Amino acid sequence: MPEVLKAPLVVEFPFTRSLGPVQSAFLTGLRERVVLGVRTRDGRTLVPPVEYDPVTADELSDLVHVGVTGTVTTWAWNPAPRRGQPLDTPFAWVLVKLDNADTALLHALDAPGPDAVHTGMRVRIRWAEERVGAITDIACFEPDDEEAAEVTVHVGEFDDPVTGIVAEARLDYTYSPGRAQTAYIKALENERRAVGERCPSCRKVYVPPRGACPTCGVATSEQVEVGPAGTVTTFCIVNIKAKNLDIEVPYVYAHIALDGADLALHGRIGGIPYDQVRMGLRVEPVWTEDGRYPDHYRPTGEPDAEYDTYKELL
Image (cartoon, rainbow, N blue to C red; front, side, top):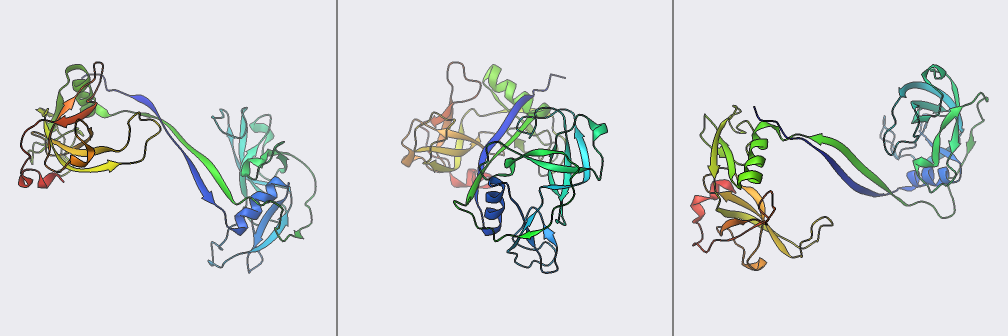
């Protein structure tokens, strides 16, 4: 059996959101070394604060100033910190119920080892040297033995409140396309052939192959060469330039049913003005000198395909 491909991949994007009055006060408070919770109608204090009671769905707005010390309710040791985590040395993830709060806050505890951590231990917030109005203004927790502080009322009003945040979302993982798509990728790269697989039950040919028929659910193994030409089944005009693509807008991205395939794949259409691309247009692949897959598809010059020949592939 040929070696199955695999490669490291990263999905990354900035997530931007605005803040309501409760979240704004909480994050602005962290910037000012103040921890705020929100009080429910039955007297519970929730930290971090939320805008609606998770039990009753009541709207919440009464802010409460809670302590910067608290008690560990549960924990887990992290022996190998990852990129972007609060500390770059081994630490404990802890749930801390801050003094005068009724819920626990998740954060990192700086401790010399797992033997130094236990449920019920007293801890204190270590503030970041530079604070901007984010949860990272709490650098971490550290062991502490002070008594609980007395609760006070806080109106949650600050100068220059934080009104929005940008959270960088990132996922690092290893992707493997599996046996069927590995064969498809290698045929493209090494032989410039498009190879699909036929379902032994319904006899449909799927490109790219998936190793199983999505309709019948049975395994596929019979390879079938398709294309290289195909038919545009549907398309869109792209007017926003992608940061990682050196392609001038506008351009056309289309679903293309390669000859002999029962599933349309997608590709860019070139060699024709974007406003002349149409359903039924016959196209063929264009390769760059060292390309591992077609750079784009261009018109073949053939008459357009009849709608009935591709209507099931829309």
